[in-house]
Amino acid sequence: MRQVAVLDATGAIGQSALDFIRLHPDRYRASVLSSHRHVSALVQQCTLHQPGLAIIEDAALEAELARRLASAGVRCDIASGPHALIHAAASALCNIAVIAISGWTGIEAALAAARTGKHVLLGNLETAAMAGLLLRQAAAESGGRLIPLDPVLQAASRCLSQTPAQHEVRRLTLADAGGPFRGLGRAALMTVTPEQTCKSAEFEWTRRDAVNAASQMRNGQQVIAAHALFDITPDQIETRLHPWGQPHTEVEFADGSLQARRGHSEGHAIFSWALAWPESADAEDRLQPPAKAAVPPPLEKPDLATFRCLSLAYEALRAGGDAPVILNAANAVAVEAFLAGTLPFLSIADLIEQVLTELPPQSVVDIQTLREHHRTAREAARQVLRNAC
Image 1 (cartoon, rainbow, N blue to C red):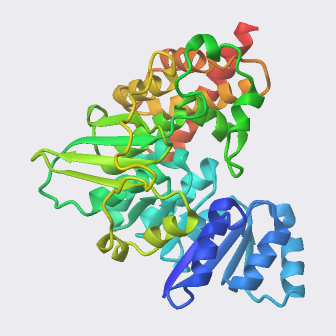
Image 2 (image 1 turned 180 degrees about the vertical axis):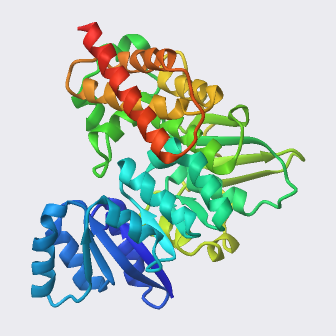
């Protein structure tokens, strides 16, 4: 029986994980459940799954959670605050940790789980993009395993997990949709509004995620995360855009052989592979073209001159050190400004580039230093905005 901690059990990723766990009670138990502030939803999940520990991230709501769990007849330990999440991820209560929390709490929880030999299911792309090197090092030292839930990265992981160790990777191709503005030129993007950008997002995405998809920063984060998680150089990683929006990955090896996998986008398929690893690695299907066409359409090269966020992601990766963290911090501030209507869409990349120029990359030492550098980069980005006013 695998014991699973689901951190942010009330979000879209956490709910998908629990839906799969509920269908397989003989194989998995949801041993730890958490939520940021959604007490009612967390109580419902605890009533259904009977975990050993329930955590509410907002400490002010702990008493209410305890009262409502007692009323529902649920007997489990109760904790609150970010440190409780980090402690739970490293504890003996679980051997699998689903990290669906965003921000630094999610990064530190993932790192705690990786250090203690857990299978760490990374539900947030930024976690791998900002702290992937530290996570990979921790997992290597502890015998843990990093399993991305992003469809493109999971497809890459599925390819590489079946590859004999002696096979040298020549090229890794990451193919994804490229956002709602794929194919548009700079002139058309000059007047793009937040409403237009977020209208095309899938319902579970946040507004910031929608902007990252539209600017192709999401594709850039996939490249950074692939480098960190799979130890593949930037020059070996190609980004392509799929005309049908079908995420998939191709891996070409030095001997000329090729492996390809379609990325799972549906929650049941994602977790049937991620939770069951390594057994799931023995039951893989090769990439097949969709039923509506005999031959898949050719993949498109991204327009790096127009969608400069993707180009900047490659530049940050080649710069090394904490440059990807600086990139993500500056992007977060730029996206906030765009959504507030104070920064044009095309200027997102301009702001990121200026911050990367102002802050030379430094070595990645530990999570505390990385967090401080992230804070410095955010302040530098805000200063650029203030100077522009």
